[in-house]
Amino acid sequence: MGKQRIFSGIQATGSLHLGNYLGAIRNWVKMQVEYDNYFCVVDLHTITVPQDPQILRANIREVAGFLFAAGIAEENSVVFIQSHVKAHSELAWLLNCITPMGWLQRMIQFKEKSEKQKEDVSVGLYNYPVLQAADILLYDTNLVPVGEDQKQHVELCRDIAQRFNYRYGEIFVLPDVYIPPIGGRVMGLSNPDKKMSKSEEKKDEAIFLLDSPEEIRLKIQRATTDSLREICFDDKRSGINNLLTIYQLLTEKTREQIEEHFVGKSYKDLKEELAEVIIGSLHPIQERYREITEEKGYLDKMLNRGAERAGDYAERKLQMILKHIGLR
Ligand code: AQP
Image 1 (cartoon, rainbow, N blue to C red):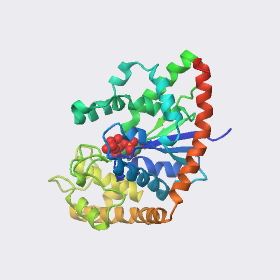
Image 2 (tube, rainbow, N blue to C red):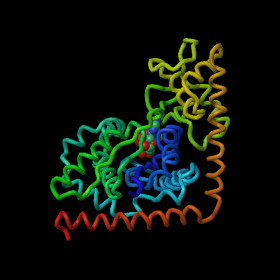
Image 3 (cartoon, rainbow, N blue to C red):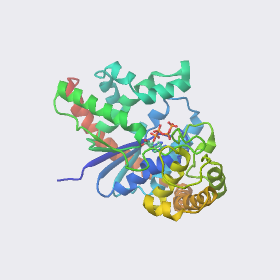
Image 4 (spheres, rainbow, N blue to C red):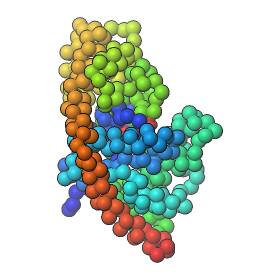
């Protein structure tokens, strides 16, 4: 039996943050040896909200660079840019034609993001999960490792695949979602009741992967806590719980070990230690990122090869789908 296949994507809506890393990318790196993997910078998803062309171009490269810098390796994984493989858009159209509008109306992310956009909200934003289903289904994906916010979209993808298979025959593999047991929802620093997000306007909410040690220390120092003193994991104390969860994810210690370690210590001690742990964890990724971006032509070479490998697979799958529908 061959390896099971993973597909996951990441938008280029801004600089990557600790939530993207701990909720998604770090797991992709860990899982990549055991699976056959396709990782994609989903630039077509990114333009479902307005983007400045110059900034978008830079963000796409930054996100791709970080995937390699974090440890995604060509031997195990295909890394590519979504718009470089045309089959994604074509399959999205085909899936649009069988997806009931009512299914999309239930999507929480659309409701949240469209509130911010008000009357400017695009059809593309509404349609986002169908394009995501196309991304996943093109590669016969078995498992989709994502943060918690994407769970509903992967479930919808399964429903679309099932509907398609029922109508046209067993064409699509039904994918499962993988949410990490810890880190599936890293929260914002000053508002720990909202998830850490790239497009959040208040930049203090997130630790970005390129933040300097000084920026990290300052952001953690300002992070919201509470007026209690005891340092322990507690869902009801969202600020302190979030800081401890980040600490746990990066140190890989157990909750008991961490609580014991901080007995008798203050929030200031926790924050100082956490900042150093984050700085130490990001340092090698930042170094590697600089090497990658300084080596002329490296990123383009990797992404061209990725697009070629992904494109071959996707095109074959697309031709088979077109045949089943009656378009070939
Ligand atoms: N705060 C988070 N905690 C854990 N996982 C997270 N992810 C995002 N935020 C967190 C996961 O990161 C992967 C890539 O996300 P995305 O780029 O597709 O967009 P998103 O889910 O909409 O994330 P952002 O960073 O909040 O972007 P914007 O601000 O543009 O909406 C996904 O697996 C996601 O679950």
